Length: 239
Image (tube, rainbow, N blue to C red; front, side, top):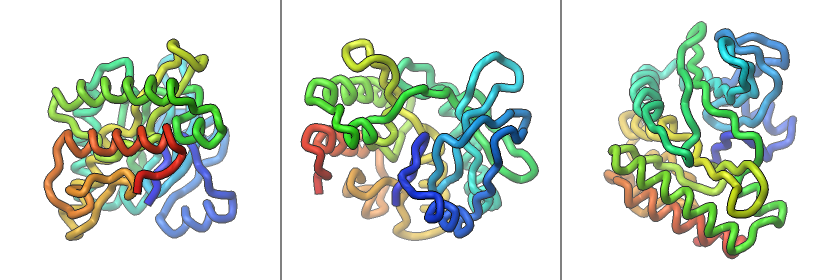
């Protein structure tokens, strides 16, 4: 299945039906949730909805992900979410989306992250602005982020172009940030704990070990990154 951090490719009717099925509660612009004033929806997917939100204490915009009611009610996921979000919050790298805070508001889990004002590599590919040089620049930056995280025993588990956030002018100064650290691992751990053969990675980019449900390490992320490079260079999925 496909998860989206800051973008959504479903139309309004399909998205609404999907949200009802997985237990998402939509909050309108101007609503206040966990102290954050919501400006607009940035994207939605199977795990929850991401909002552009005003930080309650600092003069900045954050990306606030409100997780689905279904996940928030799962005791195994809740415990893993707290643990993995805390670990991911300790990652400090220019190519990793920063995690600012996480919490529980009336039984609904949420996580506040750095807002990346731009696009993602998958959207750039769809828009026809991806070149070989740009693809190499993006993948090199993500490789740096993964090398840093792997050195701290942190695995991403869902490396794909839609999680490569881009901001700034196209060229050598374009910033690349890898998003969704921590949440993917929390969901993956919870699913493996409760359902044999369940995986969290996006299938076209998933390593054979992830698909088989066996233990994975940083090499699974490297495999997914290689698949992502093929996609960005050719416009086609590797398999």
